[in-house]
Image 1 (cartoon, rainbow, N blue to C red):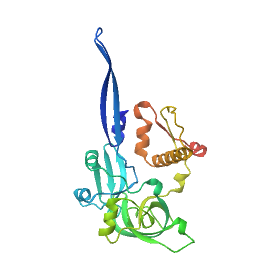
Image 2: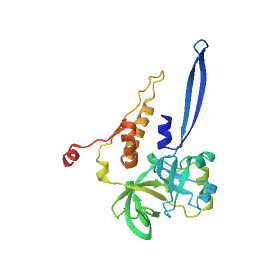
Image 3: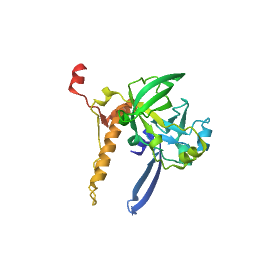
Image 4: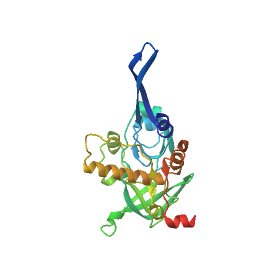
Length: 269
């Protein structure tokens, strides 16, 4: 299990052993082994505010970056305003650990009003000035925001996208508070991904789970509901990550992930 975790997410682990008993006659001993695994608390699509020194060491990348991908022992970071990318190795992270500034559950839906290409591209990404408005504000007010985004190649007027609404967020983060004092024009919105209606109609797959031990404490209703919401969000994110789905589907033949298909999709296949 520890080796499996080390292979798919950035972690650090410790192993300890305790002598339980010794049989002198048979020259045998019984040990109890304990493993402790700590996973880097950063997920794909999280918004991160890097410490200034760390950002400078990564080629002066901007402090506000997105977690573009998590693979093996590396977190891949993207500056959505410049298309600059960098890799954050596990060893570097544990020397100066930090938490995400905002996570997936805090994303807000926006409507794209206008797109003006910047001309810079990197792979499938294209930089553009994009005007957006909150979906919840449509028909209520005329508030809109112009931002730089890496999604210029796939967004068009009328599309919807998910992102972080920094202008209306109360973020308790010392690095971000330092940016507010030193940088004048921080973005009001950071777009993360386009919303594809056809993908939302798909049924999420299923994950095999370990058997749960029945504890003495019964979890509170709100805790159970939160866990269920988090699990649904995880499955939705997993649907968009083809590499991770393939990995989980074929781990030593265990089939940890099983995709679900609608009847009409099966007929089309």
